[in-house]
Amino acid sequence: MLFKDLNIIEPILKAVEEAGYEKPTPIQEKSIPRILEGRDILGCAQTGTGKTAAFSIPVLQNMVKSKKNNDRRRSIQTLIVAPTRELAIQIGENFTTYSKHLNIKNTVIFGGVNQSSQVRKLTAGVDVLISTPGRLLDLQNQGYVDLKNVKYFVLDEADRMLDMGMIHDVKRIIAKLPKERQNLLFSATMPKEVTKLVNSILKNKVKVEVEAVSSTVEVISQGAYMVAKKDKKSMLVNLLRDETIKSVIVFSRTKHGANKIAKDLNNVGIDATAIHGNKSQNQRQLALKNFKKGSLRVLVATDIAARGIDVDELSHVINYDLPDVPETYVHRIGRTGRAGRDGVAITLCDSEELGMFRRIEKLIGKAIPILGQEEFEIKESIIAEKSLKQADKQKNSSNKNSKRKYYGKGKTQGSRNKNSKFNSGKAKSVNNIY
View 1 (cartoon, rainbow, N blue to C red):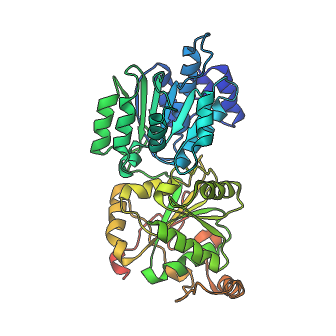
View 2 (view 1 turned 60 degrees about the vertical axis):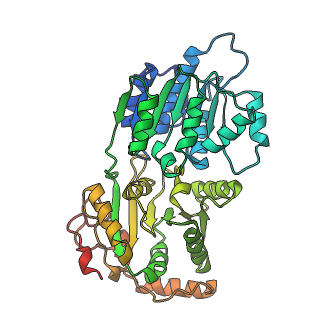
């Protein structure tokens, strides 16, 4: 099926084709026709499946068809609520792309920055508002946001809002919306609180589910190194010495950890930037801009900050720390392997994380291959204060002595197959590692 087979109006279809898209993803193929019919949608889809276009394209079309000729003053007809600034900005970029041939104006508002420019845009009038919950309630309480004309309400990544403690703010926002509206709710997982929310706001809903939450994208090759906690830094540096890793997100469990990892990498000559909630919006946007255009190779992120990072050509994800929740692992590795491309997900697991490692394997329904440390030369100490000159010497020595079989310069443990960069056969028993 092609986008032109989905009864999309010409101006939007033209914008979609100009963006380089021909075939809809499964969630787009299933969601767009039902949203065009005016149905409420519950979309169950993990990151990287194309869900933003699945709701933005039909919502724009419904807005065009419902717009009256005498609607001269812009008012908020569509409200999209997202958990993070990065995701809100990404959604705004999508709406701008698909509405380029329409007379529809969108804006994005979020906290952590001065509100004056956002207020100016709201005062000038917008048709589509994309917002994080806190800033929306704040500006509404100040009288700058009027939701009385909202016809289309989208709640994206509802489970993440629950994780971040935003669910009560979301309920307050919903209480301020008109009763008659179309509701679209998307969530990768369906915990009890999200299920309650679904049942309270969706009417005669259609459930669209394209992939089980426990599944991982098939094109992503997964592997894990069992490594002592004190050796993680050395292992990470050795991995990143491989220049075939074109772009990588390194995941840290904490903001402090992300800062430390980025600092350690920079101190040994590997350019890296940390991104998390304590960074200013300008710092975060600059890091994302540099990462997306390829001038920054290594981004160190926390899970919340990584929401909304949409880089089609991201080659690798490295889990420096395992997440506290198994489902988060699926979200993390879903940052790579997008748009049909191959992706590689590497996990560094220490003895304290074995329980979580087993729970992740149980969730995804398969063993993650254990990779041999003998494929890398592990230095007992990589001192943060090393000069760049010393780091370069170590790099040259490492390049000469390391086998580096992992990334296609030789065989990995066991045999390869055409679909995996790792041995997808029998994994070593974790119990025998320590």
